[in-house]
Length: 314
Length: 267
Image 1 (cartoon, helix red, strand yellow):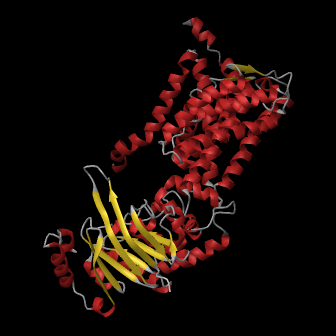
Image 2 (tube, helix red, strand yellow):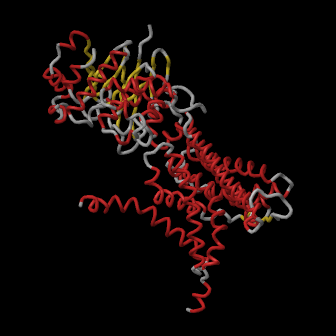
Image 3 (spheres, helix red, strand yellow):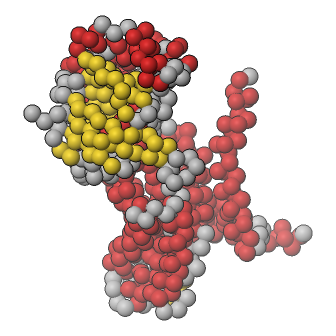
């Protein structure tokens, strides 16, 4: 016991925080993608487990062959969009149920990702390439640190601003209407199939972008890097909603606040994870832990609705 | 001059070849003149709503053709036919997007039949315009432009849906029992509003109703459906003279009595 207490040094927890925040911000981009499908489009899209690794694989292979790491991110975004397109077509053109279409794409991407990389894992060395983000920058000097965090935060803000504007356009509104009420959308002349595919492409584009960033961050792409990504994305969306939901409701720019809380949800998720790891929970159990956290948060609204009325009536 | 709507020998069978097979439309024929406001009555399963859904293109028909304003739309998908149609549904939830605000819903309706571009979804000028139009509803909604439609009552939602249907003047307005889910007072209000919107915009309209009094009181023409086709069609002066008892007699005549079900007797 003494040994355990000794090893639970607050300092080591503190040391883990910068990494947790960085990871959270990067995964926050993926969580934004999950937010688009899960909340706006009302589509449980499991493509992300595959398209995240695709983004990583594409980015790493391009960087290894001498492409600028920033450009590689754009291609990772495009690769993610392609994955979303396949899921969308399986669903809309071939009539396969949404969740099943996404599973089919996810499984096929496993082979595709192996083909992209030639093997299950490919590394990039931060000393060799000018990577956009890297684990190494966290332990660098103050300027490097500032550049790194500033860049990631600014990147997230710009992405949220773009998404905010986009979902305010005619096309973005059409996607929201499609997700909210297909009958209404069709009656108003909205091509719901087209807008479903479009939303899946944008969502998976963001996921691919996150994959590209994360591969650069950890210095490698792995065919399994996306396993369970959907759970992390959902966790971020739900943690964000539960913690910040009340603050966001009914104000101007609600939608922007929602997206910010999704990204913050991802950061909180990683802080919790590093806290749990600091408590010496075996890392093998992390996925089980994540799933339980998501299950609890997903069930809160339902249980509130079922049992909360008694509390409200008093 | 082309008819506002022409339905030619339309057939539709649901669940063909199964034990649940149901002939819903059986050689349906209908011609509407420009400006006709037709009320549709008939028993459960007579094909009233099915006819409106066939016109709207919710599914494709087995045989026949649908011509709106001289244009054959039989092979067009639902979202492409929307250009010609304004629709209000029985369920107040169906006609609007609950998670979007009133002005966003209206802006989506104002772009019916147009492609969705990267321009702003709702412009400032539109907001002003919508405010004025909402004022006419006299429900105080003009002050709640950015309220989510999901927070409105059923009657308010139907009123907004009616307004949305007329923002971009449709060639044909389809009202599918749009007051059936409302309380009597609200239903009367929404009906009066429907009359007003149809008259002001000089719309051609089809209105399905279960209420025979309403069917007689509204519109210039009344049709009765039975087993997927029209069995009675009355317009102008003859329609004005109609009484509920006449319609009941007609029901019994065509169906040997079993036709006038409880729901119609009560209404």
